[in-house]
Structure formats: structure tokens, C-alpha cells
Amino acid sequence: MNALKLYAEVPRYRNRQLLQDLGLGLWSLLWVRVGVHVHDLVLRLAEPGRTIERAGRGLSGRLAEIGSRVAEVPLVGGSLRTPFSAAGDAAEVLQQAGVAQQEVVESLALWLGVLLALIPISYVLYRYVPDRWRWIREASAATSIRIDAEDLHLFALRAVARQPLYELQRVSADPAHALATGDYERLAALELATLGLRPPEDPSEEWPRS
Image: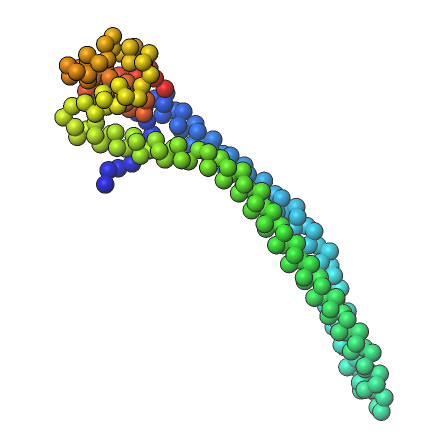
């Protein structure tokens, strides 16, 4: 399997790719931080639930303690304990309501934070990654062919088939004649330049197309 080529060889082309990749990383980091901030803000709404939970727990414990002491009263202890037990049960319901409120807020904070970060990041990835991956595949294949092929016929053919006529005329006054006579170098260089690659016979030349 051929090694993947992640960046172009032409500096101008490569710098643009680096800036785009860096911009994608910064964009993702920005929205992750926004999502975390929103999560923390929403999570503050759980504080009343924690207060309710603490109050219910404290009241339930206190009523249970009082009920235990009242139950020790001879003859009427059991009857006196009943109201305190009922009140303790109500306090436990209050405690459970506080816990439930916290769980709802925590779930809301999590999903709001995740969605707020995920949606803009996913949109940019959807717009950017397919083209970036397509370039990597094309450039990797072109690099392998450029190294292994005996001539640049394939790239010259692709240039004649794909490049605008004014670009073909810029490198050759008669592109069809150049292709027919085996004068492939300039045509092939034009096609390779669209990928930010240099022709193998001239690794120092920087091609003008970006």
C-alpha cells in the first residue's frame, strides 16, 4: 500500500492546506470550549435540586430520630410515632424530588453542551473533510505513478482532458501536437501542479498554479 501524501510539495499550496487544517482545529477547539461553558452554566440550575435534597434528607433524619424517641413512651408511643413516620416519608419524597431535578438538569446540560459543540464542528467537517480526503487520495496515487512510471504520458493525457484551454496554451502553443509527438513534460507538469506536486525531473521548480 502506498504511503498517504498529506500535504502538497509546492509551498504556496502546502501553506494553504496547513492553514486550513489549523483553522479546522481551532474551530473545533472553540466550539468544544463553548459547549463546555454552556454545560457548566446549565449545570448551575441543579443547585436548587441539591438544596431540596439536603433539606429532605435532613428533615427525614430528624423526624426519624424524633419518632424513635416518641416510640419509647409507654402505652401511647406507637400512636405518637405514626405522624412522625408519615412526615418522614414526605421528607424522603422531597429528597427524591431534589435528586430527580438534579438528574434532569445534568442530562440537559450534557446534551446542550454536546449538541452546541457537535453541530458546527460536524458542519465544517462535512464541508471540508471529503475534499481534503479526495486530494490526499489523488496526490498519493499521483506521487506513486510519478515515481514509478517510465514517462509522464498519463499526466499529459489527463491535462489535455481536464485542464482549461487557456491553461493548456500557457504551457504549449499546440497541446495536441505536443501530446502526439511525446512532448509530455510541460503538459504533465501542469496536471501535477493542480495537485500541488512537482514533476520528478525538476524537484526544485515551483509551479505557478495554486
